[in-house]
Image 1 (cartoon, rainbow, N blue to C red):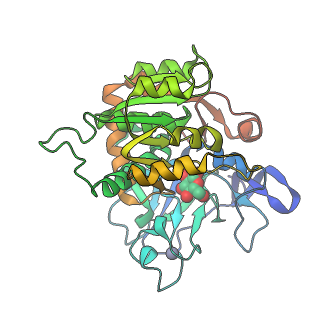
Image 2 (image 1 turned 180 degrees about the horizontal axis):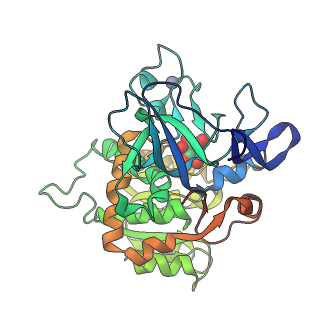
Length: 374
Ligand code: BGC
Ligand code: ZN
């Protein structure tokens, strides 16, 4: 802190710069708001894409956007009408804020993840500053309490919400058929899932599928041995390299596939794998690829299979409160089941000053985290 300002990392699109900035320290402005000290912020592909200026936008009255949407913080001050939190509590904020339109039934019902107008905002991404700074202020409606025992991994809550929302969608879509195991068994028991990609979203999604009983395969490019493959195999999923095992052979290994969870953000491999999705299967897209030149896709084959095999193709973005709550609960389960593997999802913790290599260089490891407060 310095003269009412604090350190922040942001983009200045008008100058095409990524920079360490002095940003005004926030103050509680409404009775249900809290002031939070940022402890950790995770870096993801969305942040890196914003740094190429292909995505993201600053608030209308500001030339820069403070980055960061995967945060863990500690409450330092509460407004007079805050009921659910007190100073010292650990919190993870959500990302998206509702649009202003009265006719948007999603936003009016706290489901801005399904906003109909597109006029939602997102902290650290779209028109509201993010969390890559020393303090932030937020309304209690957008905060989730984290138990102290999860402090060392809670920065993974937001990337895990991608899988939690995807799974909530999956159950809804598959309720079209008799899909549940019934008889109180894990919902994924006896079913086969394939995860595309072994980045943080893929690995956390793999864990979420495993705790629900799915037989889970991870199909990812890098040949073995490699650290991501080791991590995947250590939790009871099976890593297969698409570089060494071609699609046909992979399909013979997995048998009929009930669910594909795409977490790779690359169209070629994604549409190839769509060709091996099974009867009544669901294919969930979570990746947000940048614009790239068109590629050939076996569209007629896919169309025939989607129809004749009752397949559902689902896109999912952002997450509601329930997905955050599910993520916090699951993270606790992962920590009990795989304490070492879960810890290894965080590849490194870095000071704010190292932002350039984390945001601009080729990504290394799995999840890189910036540590701000203690
Ligand atoms: C964030 C989401 C957001 C999406 C699109 C992702 O990285 O996790 O919350 O909705 O980017 O902006
Ligand atoms: Zn809306």
